Length: 144
Image: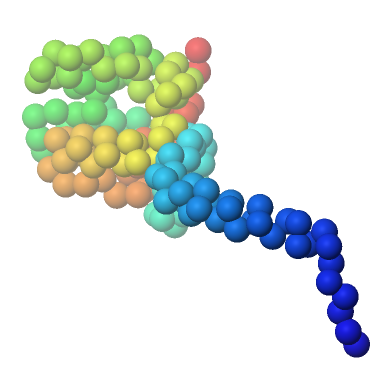
């Protein structure tokens, strides 16, 4: 079986060759972090913990001290639906509950950065996936 040359294919070939550098450039550019929802983040913590988030446990965790000087509520308030202030610097911190601050829990890398930093301040260690799931489950119950 012989194949006859396809005149349309030969006209497309130069365009495909010239677009390869553009494709290579596009593939080399950094990809912005994917936005997430609080529910998607919670699902990830629940999967990692292999247990559902518990809002009651999350509220207790958030408002209690864990052997250190601060609790989460020291900066974010016991009911984190309004702005709080950093206990050490006095810097304003936006509302933590996602229903009151839609930017909260929308960037996974930023969420992890702040959990890591704040858990070390409060617990002197990183939070477990279960602790994150509990706190986020509670925060998601707070509605206007």
